Length: 282
Image 1 (cartoon, one colour):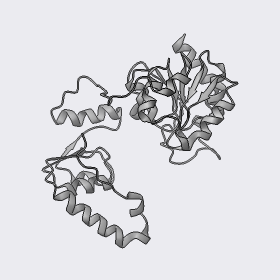
Image 2: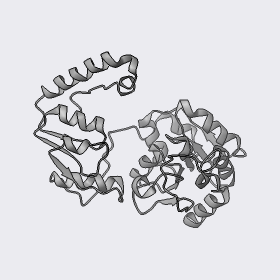
Image 3: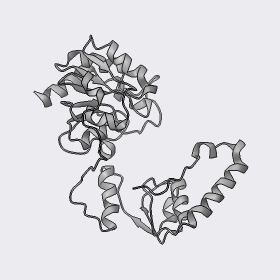
Image 4: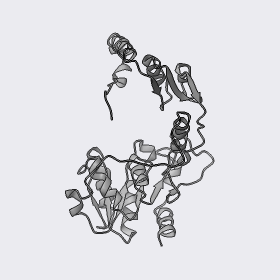
């Protein structure tokens, strides 16, 4: 469905040592995008950079959210009120609705994938999936607590993570008293779909695979700390968010509130999570 992919060196562009090269590349991007004759440009990021690219597109219709940050709305021809107090999916649906798309039903049309890849033959017949990583360290519940939780569950646990985060999965397995196995780094995205899809339920931090599980209609137990589950939690009414309620939440990990970490994660015990799972699965 993608006819052309534009690669943007945003991290390199932040370096002063590449300033002259950066100006040249940005100017070339402006010319190239403007020459394509785009009809519509949609900016879901709402940052100055994405707004600038919207302007570069010279599209007749440039859509974005009215409440976006960093001055990006000045590049749009149409500014949609999306609200920051609702789930991101519902927010994006407002923009889709403005374009005339039906929004009464949310569907997740995955690309075709093999429902029984070789990795499935190595897994138990019934199991629970854990995803103990997260994009931000502040959003990670300690791996050792995931492991202690795995040791108490009736079902065997399959731990997923990228190859770079294998050490987190290994820490979970080490603390699981033999009730968890790791397949960290052993699956690509399409192979991960059937692994998650056949799980009894899914336990995770605020992370990408959480949304895969929600899309596959696998019950999710999502552990949240400084992030906001109203905006980025698992979408749907079969899921459970587990979070300590503090007046400061959500703080979006702007700064630690204890010497080492965030108290909303530090004070969430294995018992807290285990009891919530038992309440919703028994």
